[in-house]
Length: 140
Image (cartoon, rainbow, N blue to C red; front, top):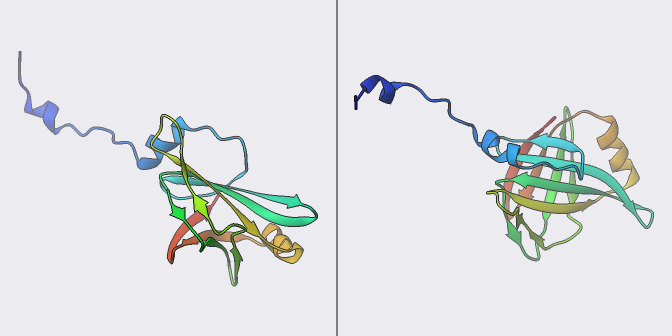
């Protein structure tokens, strides 16, 4: 058996965190809206009882458990920002079976004017705030 230093020094292609997380998960329950290196954000406008709201889902390595304080979602436009409050104050991520990923579903209240602004203006990024910490995602 021969030993070779050249085999030890060869660079191996390393997978990025997103290559490790995303190929294992197919999600067809929403519209992909934003992402960072290790998470995808799905966002859809919905209506319940005549009131609009935003349904968001974060899939990836992000995980949280929040009681009584909820979160905010900020849409960052070229010259403006719009911040929405979560519909529920308790937020909890769920592990996705047989993966290292989690699934976090959060609904946000909004009115017709806010919905039109988000739909009609270019959103550069979105920012979730959980317990004072901001998580930024670039729109796709």
